[in-house]
Image (cartoon, rainbow, N blue to C red; front, side, top):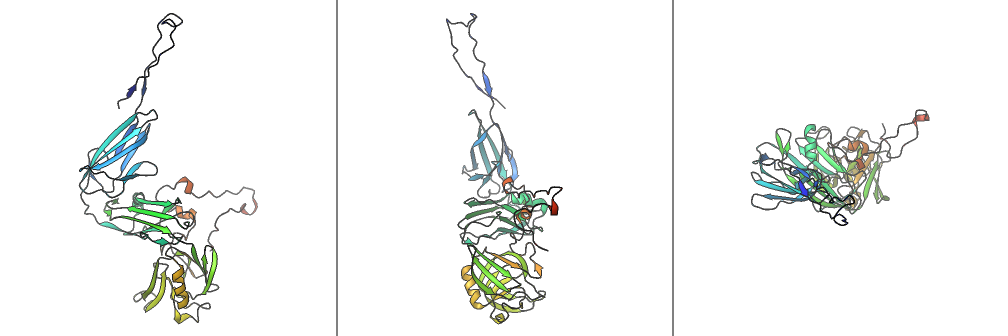
Length: 416
């Protein structure tokens, strides 16, 4: 790379036109100021570039000060830098079989600049089968404080491809409340949440930029999905099988107790931390062909908690059992009046915690992002977790400490 030569001129102090030894004063030596070095990807003249391509930038000896991306008609392409400045990500997918030119300028500490360009052509629309993605975070909604950003995939994403997919998932919050993506073991879902519940009033913007993304060897992403919504008031529900009572809390304060009847021993309700997924004023349960099923019933004021079919709903037929015994097929039965009242209080995204039942909530059976500790949750990320979000290491007990050492702060581990 050529060096930019900067001549630094200086006029030395001259007495009678000579130095002290009578010789002419020497001129200061010229010094060379190196230019920043830039490497761009896709490489110049690349072809068959995926529609999900980003302009990656490696810079040495300077900082990026300008990026311009345009298509072959001269139309500018909007792009946003990644947080680490490693790439500029177009805000919408690139178009198939189009040529794009990216011009990037870097400036060194001395003010010397370097500009590099790369021109590349995108691939034709892929004929490979697509991975169908579903974003369970709609636009212009108000959600509860436990709402995880959830993406589901059909077919599930193999472990080897999860990092590539996760790099194309973007979340911003205002005010800032950074979080982490975590995969369900089978790759069918990935969740995003922060270490603690969202603060009421937080705005969350999501982009799943998967259109045209190569996923493994044989598939591509189906679509580019975006949504921006707000977090509403804090509401939580606690259900204790031992007492057959539901506690409804708003901003941490108890506002109502409601008798319940849960799943009978042959079809028990799950214990764990669930999130309200859907709300229906009226729906039909049709369990014909399912294990322990075979019935059809219309219910009022139903709120879904799991993919497996656990709901809170009005059940006037079991009012005499509510608060005393479990008679349902796994759902949480409450009176018609209580179910109607709950529909006016809760939001999709509110936390519902069950304790004391015969079975535990299985990962991925609903939006189970909160049914694990933060330490376990971050282990599900396919990318390195930022240092600020890594759990603090558990102190190692002193060799002579009695009883295993001092207790550590934080949530207790789940019981056996």
